[in-house]
Amino acid sequence: MKDHIKRALISVFDKRGIEKLAKSLHELEYEIVSSSGTAQYLKDQGIPVKEIADLSGYPHILGGRVKTLHPSVLGGILARRDFQMDLADVEKWGIPLIDIVVCNLYPFEEVAKKRSGLGDLIENIDIGGVTLIRAAAKNYRYVTIVTDPDDYEGITEELKTLGNVTIETRQRLALKAFARTATYDSIIHSVLKDALAEEESFPKAFPIALTKAMDMKYGENPHQTAALYEDPIKETPFKQLGGGALSYNNILDADGAVKGIKLLSDSIGCVIIKHTTPCGMAIGESLISAYRGALASDPVSAYGGIIGFTREVDEEAALEVSTKFYEIIVAPSFAPKALEVFRQKKPNLRLLAFDVRNIDDFRIAKTAFGFLAQEDTLPPEPDFDGGEWIGEKRPDLKLDALVAWKAAALAKSNAIALAKDGATIAIASGFTSRVDAVKWAIEHAGEKVRGSVMASDGFFPFSDSVEAAAKAGIALILQPGGSKRDEEVKKACIERGVPMLLTKARAFRH
Image 1 (cartoon, rainbow, N blue to C red):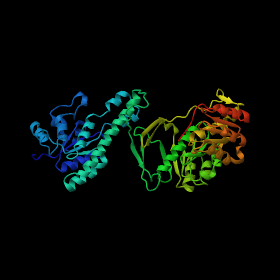
Image 2: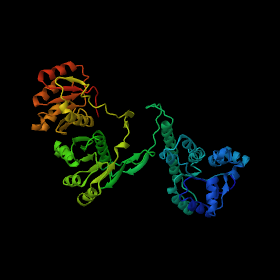
Image 3: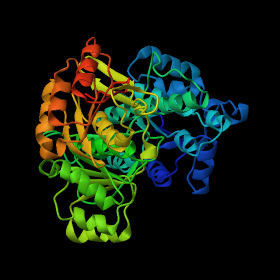
Image 4: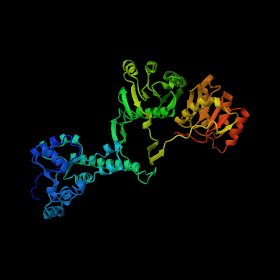
């Protein structure tokens, strides 16, 4: 192959740092070829530039929709320098070889974040840029592809010190480029799916766009590494206002707190999470009363837990919470005086402001068998007026019943929650036996159990749970029903004088 001019193609929407890179390439005797907007920008900076139209011999058409899609451009990128057939075509057609491609894409993500109309979305789908990136990444053995301004300095340094970009760097940048185009296409699919009102929840193919938000302090255990990824179209759903770095477990537990806040959002409420499951939940006239009610449910387990509040944290609540050790507090907001209390008394306590309106109802989990996707919605609240009652109706216990039901729905199965005076007094979760969960909850509640409400996230398979509840003095039972022994369970309630409301919907959470 004859010696060829060193050539760099630059086509960027985000012009951050491009002037410095282009000047360095010019000083290193690279011929710079650019598309119209980038070319004019570089010319304005006094950098010699050739237009792509000069390279291809073909003008831009369709109002600029087609600029770089030409054999003279793509051939110069894709030609294999040690493949005789490719070199013969390069010679025959006078194709100028391109050694470096610097390219980033139309800001489809930013346009989507602005809730722009369909027309604007369509016009901001990059075609030529994606093609240039994929072509250069495919031919990384000979061509350097640069898609991120943060890589400009490293590329320049290698060119100055080594005279070329190393194969290791070209490989890394190629993988980064493919990740960029894959993410870009996934974002387009996600946004247009909504814009075009595609209603299929579980399509045959499900591309997911994720970008790294932060590295975690560590994973589930200190020897494990972890990171948090977010949907690039959505705003970061939380803001950390205090405390140290977040770990993998912190995020999992905070997720449980956020779910609890959403369940209690119509009340002044508090939920305390330990190992992703609630150990206390309560509503009250104030945050401090709700906190005290939730804490009393299981003060031992609450140590080192995560607190979720449904309202802005005030100074009074901050002072009370600061007397004990917790990992995180999650709330819609924090009053300035509350922040000052935490900074003085608990500087390491992680404070997360989270708006529960940012929660969607779709969940994906990876398993050894593949990815599971589901709509993560709770069934309707128990119907106290039109629901199926067994025995005496107890509308006077509605408040406690709702607290118990919400706690059971948030806890891990088999879950049993007992509530009294607007607060849980026991939450049994993770049991493999329903009746064992009932017995543990009753034992944990102690003397408070009499007159309380019991809620179960799943049906009672036998009447033994009813018998245990009756013996303990439970005033009302809520359970979904659906067992083949439902009639036996109903009969046990009537015989023992324990009212029961069938919720008709299971609320399992594994």
